[in-house]
Length: 418
Image 1 (cartoon, rainbow, N blue to C red):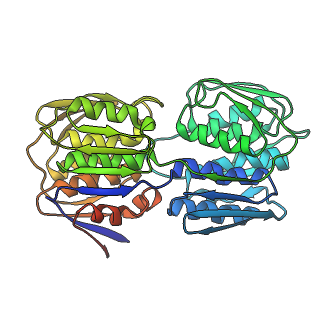
Image 2 (tube, one colour):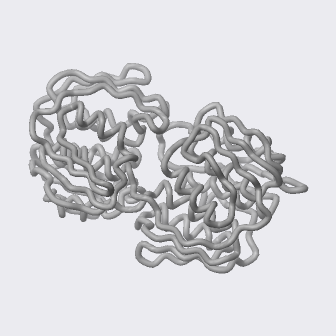
Image 3 (cartoon, rainbow, N blue to C red):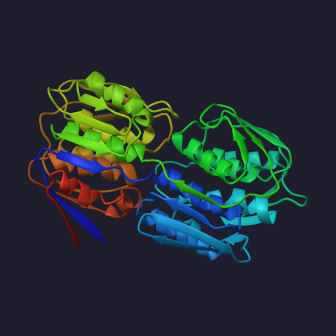
């Protein structure tokens, strides 16, 4: 098990290029199952989740090769309709295999997914929507069996919550269904728009992606495509907060500022100097920042995936602040670890109350999930003395070259093995 050793106290300064979005690349990879034609996906980040997805596709029967930041999917063999627990348990996004396989094979068996321990994240939203499209579903022994005798049929699908995964899964299924599907209360994240753009390149008829209602007119066949994945907005937000917490300044290249409005607006209110161009963001600390309250919400609200990093920053600002978590019910596991640095945090139901402290002291800490790990690294970068972050395999799931990029900005990090 690897660990990162951080010696804090250095201001991060410099320029980095933001990697492609993992949360966009994964559903696009699974979209290749909808065609037997070749497909090329560029700007794909180098992450363990991406490697898992590529291995998954190859297991299913799709010849898929990753070289650098490009993934090419070639002709398909006979698809398997069973996705075993050994693969599914490594990554929650594996549930996205259901949509395309159900559309093409009319049946699929998928083990219930694993992933980070940040809440139940039930799949019932997915399953209820598949039922609306005409699928029969049974759940037994930790496995979901889904089938449709005569193929999927377009229908009205309404989500009780704008689930990103469910929106993606129904998109992947409905593009080959007979007739029109209308998704109401759909997720509005940029990653949804990116997937819809890919599907339309393949010959699908998707309109409204990025809004609350999405319409999909089913087609008989889809073809190959070439597509560049959008930049990772959560990675970008993490590095902007890194500049803020270390009182430094960073320039992010190859980024889409419009995807970060909710985070950047709060940082500007706090006092961080942020300047934007079409594809760059400059963030610079120029004065003491003021604490700000936030509530996590579905996009375009403040993202739950930035909540932990934001908490690390708020802990070091003079005054009190409050963070309300409205997306996941178990996403405060990093609180205890931040307290090891000296943070003054009190959990109150689905919210935390924070009293700013003057400094953090380095400590041994353990990563519980991907974004919690980012928060602990940020805390270590500003803490006095040495911080040892263990279980960093969580970070390798979502941050492309994190250590290398932080070193380029002046951070003092060393990766070691136990």
